[in-house]
Amino acid sequence: MILNTVIFDMDGLLIDSEPLWYEAAVKIMAAYGVTLDEKEYAMTIGLRTREFLDFWFTRHGINADNLPLAEHDITALVAGDIIARGELMPGAESIIEFFKEKNFKIGLATSSPVVIVDAVFERTGLRSLFDECCSAELLPYGKPHPQVYLNCVEALKSHPSSVICFEDSFNGMIAAKAAKLRCVVVPDKPRRYEWRWLAADYVMDSLLDFNDEILGRIAF
Image (cartoon, rainbow, N blue to C red; front, top):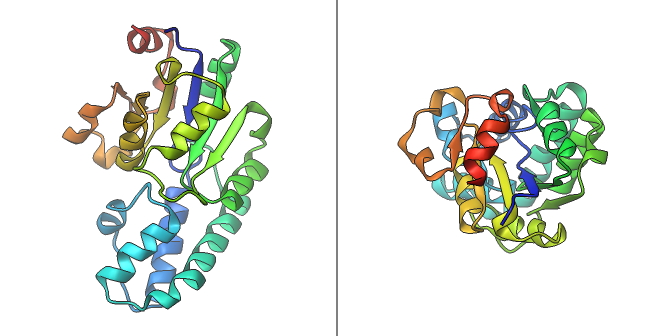
């Protein structure tokens, strides 16, 4: 089947928000007596905020009753920081336009809550370029479960075999492949050459690298 649909992840792929999430995570976890370094944080990139917190609260024996407040606080911090100083990743706008010019249906499938999606669109003005936006916020499971991708494919009225998606995290890639979608991964530089990205259909250093030749290889 011919590719006619593209679905993008958001955090760390289109918007350079992972440093903001990390800053907020460090601040919130410190309030509970936990020091979180970048290597530890990277283990949970791509999870929903509640799942991220539940992982670290469980590991450090923190009372789960604190989860709702911690989730609210970290989300509020990140949303505010995105609106104030969030920046698009290199090539984010141009790759959306690349597919727009080819009349692809364009979707967004993110683990982030809707308030973060709204903050990104408020900051970047990209909302009008997307045909459908799906959040895993209220789903039973977030990435690496494929449901948010399956929902986005359905909302776009597409077939999985006609979809290419873009991810930056391992959890996101697993979700996309579990949904039987072609997946291009753009990992951050420290993890660019890890063996686990071999499960992707293509790996790039930057969204700026994508072109017709790569699209043709993936579509084959």
